Image (cartoon, rainbow, N blue to C red; front, side):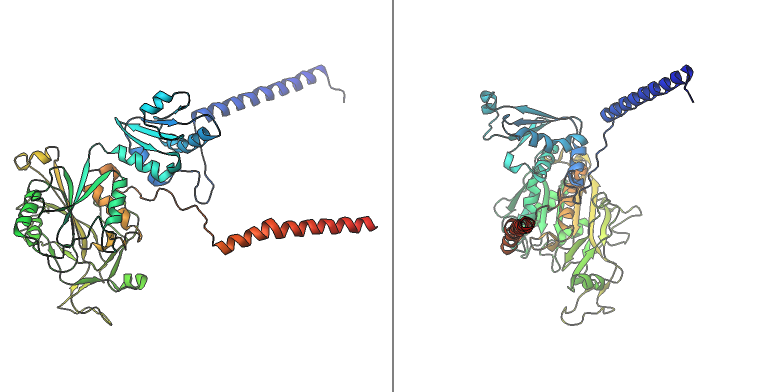
Length: 470
């Protein structure tokens, strides 16, 4: 069949239409790639993406963030910095990156206090943080953004002088690791003995009472009572045993502690420890509402919220101090507070032990009337208190268990009124390094660099010799 002129024109029109449609499709794809960004990280550990903790911190920053990188143009230094900052820019459009060559602008580098090539300065709302090239890791960068997100100086004061858990010592019983993690996120911590300083500092954001082992003096109790009366925020970590002079504090808060140590048979099956309690379900309080990690408590005491008419009215407020109380988390129904010995087989004794479910942590808050505020609390409209029946969960020995660190930081953020940072995950990046024993490394070097090449070369020589003989 001989094609006619009409058929030729139709074929040319079809070809031209195909080319035009193809060019339009490429144009639309180009436009969509500029307007819409889709990035998929298929690596097992998401090594090319930000962790949920970093994303949460970036999204909570209000206002532009400026990153100034003092990096020379030699090598691929700028490419590495741009690749590192890029994922943060994907989640925050007003995070800008500017490169400054310290060799071409030595005066500007000196004014900025630059000490090494590749140093980065992050600026936000008039504050700044700096990171050297060697410390340019996701955890350090995210912690710097967290510190910039806080607008004021937040002092966490730990009561000392009575055998409390210390923020300065590194013993298993103490809280130095937790304090170090707080400092990374912009908190300032100090231990304070009321014997040396009779009054709590006015800039105290949160007072922490962590398991005193000696009785407080009447004047010290009076100062704590004054701090609480004038609107101070408090974290009370109470271990099983006597109150050591803090009976007046418990009475003011309207709480009691059940005698004995909490025993949870189901948790004991997991932890192999009789007095360990694993918590996986939490209340609806803002401090723990979206908390998704398990927490582990060792040798904990149960908190009792009296429900009589003298302490509470129908809406849950104290008639004396107007506290709003809410349980953060409690135990299972089969748990109980054991008052007897913990040796051998431990069983619930009706009439002696307190049956579950038992409260492990309670949050209290109240609105402070204007006539009760002092100069230290002019801007604070809500007073916040958290009481936990255990201090071990934040101790150096147990802080790494499950979500204990996350819980401690979430509570301290809520108490210091940093609501935007409550329930932010702590771990910014999983461990992606592979550490091998020396013997294994030597074995791999011998196998891949010596043995296999020798085998391949020998095999090739033998094949060559056999073919040559033919």
